[in-house]
Length: 311
Length: 158
Image 1 (cartoon, one colour):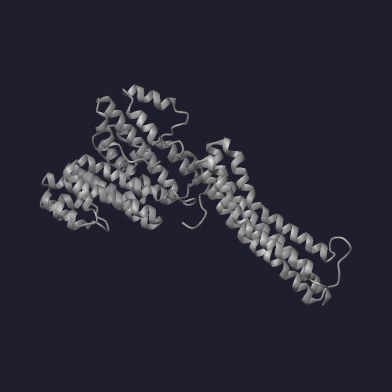
Image 2 (cartoon, each protein chain N blue to C red):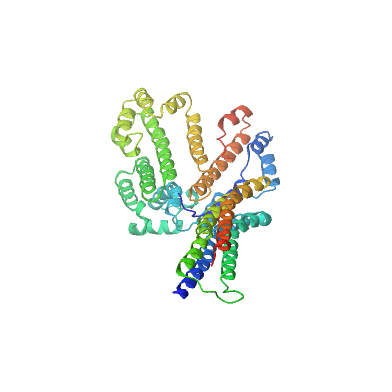
């Protein structure tokens, strides 16, 4: 973006970046003997640690008119749609399954789904909500309905990124889609899922053609890997073959690498999005670390699992 | 015809104050926005970002100085307005253009550079001097334009 838009937000974000947990601080946390000691180290830090919700509120307050930023929350919106749909059909409360921040008020989502007034949903969710509800009530197949919603989330991200966003968010949406598609297609190939299921579950993108990916996954893991090796993501094939957990890390790391490309920008939405992504990664790292500490995982394994840091 | 010459000279004075002032206002405003963002997170950085915010303000002062010198030279300020031919009036108008145009664009450009420098203060306060130097480089061209405008104003004979 060549304009000087969001100068104030970018400057505030740059000030907040200095509060992100650094490599040195993470090493201190890794060396902590227990989860309790970890909490003590974190709370003794001089700087304030904002939650993801607080970060989003800050970014949104600075740039309330940006449709581009909202794309970052599409996956949360669609996740909540899954939770709310299932809860509505099973007469349970969906609150505990919700994730935040979101673009849509959660009470509003629940009431819309209960009354089936899908027109009140944001445009990018309307059709999917209706289709998923119909599919779930007709087949009672929660997995299929979830796959439909997951795939629609990726598709909505890509569409919105081309409609409202610049190169940064377009590439981000593409990377998220590619990673999700590879994971889904791999699982489908391992579980011998039929082509009709895989076709619903994968989204497809410019770099990974939907039909070719679904066909290769349907033919089994060997066929899937040989297809992946013929794409720009052949590195992903090697990593996924050796360890699905390492592949998850690889996915997060390429997103962080992409976020780093916005670090040098002084204006525009890119640094805001990059900071949000960095904060997500920080929270994920803390969660991994906490679980590892609770399970007494050794230091080498923790180091292997830790995601690349933005700072 | 003589009054048209004087009018052109006054228009030149007005342009130098006007355009250089717009450049400064835009530049200072942009840095102010960025500075407010940093101060909202860390109020202790106020003094450092204030220096950066002041930098693009100089173009407006150069424009004002040029306008005063020009008005003084043609007697509008002081002894009374002199009679100027159209060509003399045009010469004064042309003399005001360097600072008017360079002031406008350099004010905006310096604002951008200083706003980017605010990012340095935000992330690495110890290196804030580098941000100030980089933004101050833009000043060179505003000073050169001011120099030319003043030389022209004082060397037009009538």
